[in-house]
Image 1 (cartoon, rainbow, N blue to C red):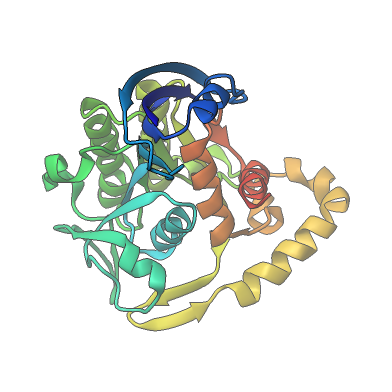
Image 2 (cartoon, rainbow, N blue to C red):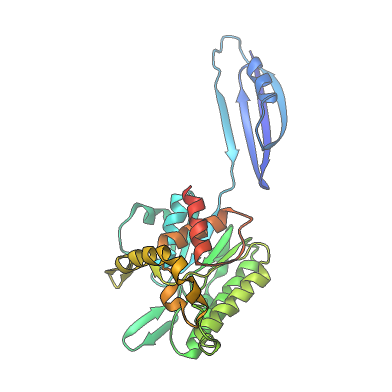
Length: 318
């Protein structure tokens, strides 16, 4: 019986797949050579050898080298970051989290599928409440983090003094963007914030100016692949010091009410700071799925509003 070693080089969306196929049937090799592979481009070659005629095997052995997505999430053990890691794992994307605490203590099968990297941390202290950024990116060993990454997602942000907010919301993200660019990571996704239609004197706060500085860096370094998501109030089950806070008990019904009355409240949207009351909340799952859409869709880049975040999430669910 004849044996054919059939080599396929398949190119789809600029991702090469190299397949080695051993086929023990002459008719089958003809069928393979003349098959249609849809939108895949195919280049093929084969070599012939001999096998004893008493072999009845008609098996096909395929070995494929398939490129997968690998996302690094800065702040991956936080409220939004953990939702992104969970969504990544659920969609077959390798997830690496960089955070102060490393691996979270709460259970979940998806937790075992994430690589948790603990990092040195900056602390912002407000009274007795401690907020943290993702892991101090100013001293992070990027060599250990960004190797092979196809996207970086930053959830870095926090409150504090003007200087602290500028450092966390702005400078830390700028450092991360430039590191990702230097290491050749093709995509950067920033979780920013809706401006709530606030007057300019309030938007001059370092919380917002830091965020906008980070946005500018993303769009400058990644003009054709950078993504900025601007959610408003994000709801879900948030864990703080081992305590679960059900923000969805407020956020979910409020989102439904504001969405249902959107046509009635639209004339008020031009009023200063009106979105503090009228901007619909966003589920943390929607934010996470919008990130997944950004990772997998090369045509998804730029700045995205609350409604556009929800639309992107629905694309992933569909």
